[in-house]
Image (cartoon, rainbow over all chains, first blue to last red; front, side):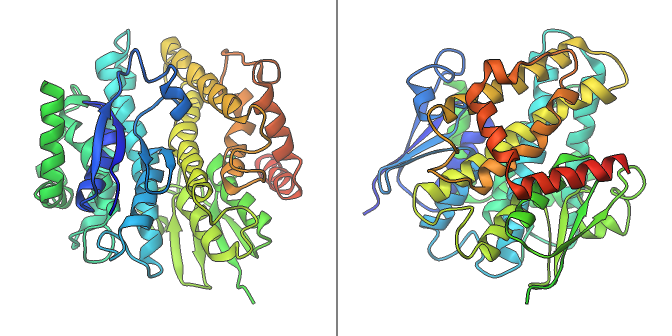
Length: 218
Length: 218
């Protein structure tokens, strides 16, 4: 029997919830522990777990591993627990297309959406040119996804994979983080929009987004 | 016999050269084709290869795959061609520690070092608070690596892996991209510094950095 995995998380940050979606999709037993981003995440004992001082991290007693970086955690969970390949492929090129889109998400979506959030919400001065830069990048990434998804339901092959799922949680924050860069996702990026509707209708995704909503408002 | 892999690259951008290091380390036959970042990379026919309009991408005639995202390309090359596991591990947790550091590099080093470069070199106005933000992040990432490398020669286990190698090319640009944020890498981050000296002394890394130097000055 699979022992309970611990997910080190944060109530509103999107990256830990990206991992939660994969844990839910694979029906793995897990418990969530929240780490305070001001007091705990860059201090001991958490930095003994993750010297980079970020969430998510996981502890998996089934293998004894402690692992950080959401992209690497997802690759680990898929390799180890998705034994029926429900969210991945073993064939070439599909197997590596999934990794390609996961890396696109973790290096091309997350950090740039994160900078949009920073300059719209947290930066100590108003820098319009930086807001414009990152607002434009949110649009560009969405345009790229919209182009790829034209005539397709999912990024790779004909089924939902971990690659699709990895994009959900940052997009849930899109209206909040883009400030005065108004984006008509439904009108301008219809293939992207239909895909995101498809992903967020999945029971596992719905549950995680509800859990996040509860955690944020709690 | 392995057929020649095509690496779509750029003379000065660090990410394609990160892939070149792995190609050299594995002694794979490859040819480099440069893509102009202003005229070609975001236009057809290149966007038929990579709709994200970025380099690197590879074409591998041995499997027929075309793949983009440097992190995914490295995972593919290692899985397929590092049959003796010279740059990786098959054991848990080491196998996933390599992926953890690769994702840290591609999501935590590359994009933030890239923003430092942007605000110091290319942004249309001088935004000191943004330069400071990304200069501080270059320092923080280096501090994290320095902490991890204390008492160790490499990030994972006792040998050089693709994870270590993935950090080299962005660090080669560090003096150029950090502007007036002066960083004493040797004095303040000695474990990081010794590791980078070790990595850049490798014949494959030296060859790639020389090739890059030639391409940039050519």
